[in-house]
Length: 445
Image 1: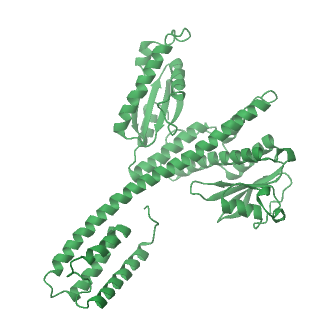
Image 2: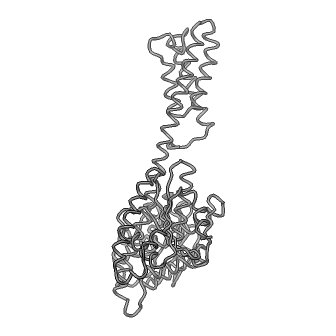
Image 3: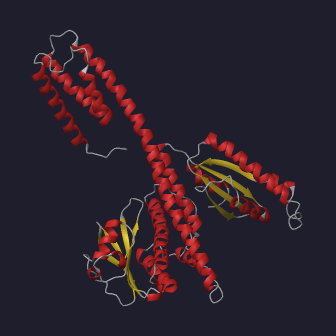
């Protein structure tokens, strides 16, 4: 629920205690009418309304039962107490219905907000990493023609990356290669304290002081802390600490840097290290989350899991799993739009169209798969119902048709594209829960 969850037993004890307080208080006020049912203002409805709207229908019924028991002994000779109880029972059910509908809507908005915050964090990491990739590519392209993001992608697609220790080693290799981090380690954090080391590089003792001020501050404040942030520099043996925070706002891992060249120890490099560490571990968590979901059979996605699976496929599958769980739990639908063709040149045009299309929003995701003789584009559109998707699909189809008509006159493409090719395009959309059926329909499993 939206409110803080409590044990039903605790709630029941609170309601029973409140009922006794009301009866005893009413007895002091009017001994012959402890529930004050003969007054112009119905206090009985007030108490039942407060409890039902705060705790829910079950607790409202429990309070009504308590009042009914008291009424049986206090008002048994009163001709109106039965009608009053039944009238208040009706209001309890009415308040309970309001409570359920209100909190159902609040939970829907809450799960949407949590999803958007998670996606914002992931997209922010991706944006900063792309910027770092561009900067590094400019500086090292001549001597090492590979982009920073490409190197990370290669590491993320390693078949052993779903092991935490391997993920930590890969992270430290990246930091040493691009930022000359000579001595560092990554620790697992449990209950807001370093629990055990994942991996380390350089001359650093893996047995750390858990009371080290730099480490404590990074975990407590849930943000990167470097030496200059501490007033008393003698309280730490390290230069920089970066926590990784999961989607539950809990620190689960921490990067601790002991040694880095003086020329690299400035805010620009430290910010890049922070982004890289969080980016790699965010992507690792995606793979681990997807593996856990499939293992628990919460969402068994039929797409084959290859050893070197592309990161965009991992991202797409994880979003499908997340949105399917949201649909099952909160009845908030999301849609998948599919465009398929057997023409490779048309496939490339569609890919370019999807990449540069303004109709798609930042949360929308797409992947392109080659499934036997088909080139299939899946577009995942979160939080869109079936009626709303009809209009969006028409806009997409209209924009794609206009683009292909214009591009058909290009000399490089006119011999490859024809009206027949466009008419052979297969387009459809369906609920996110039918992803497996789509994969089977287009022979992608």
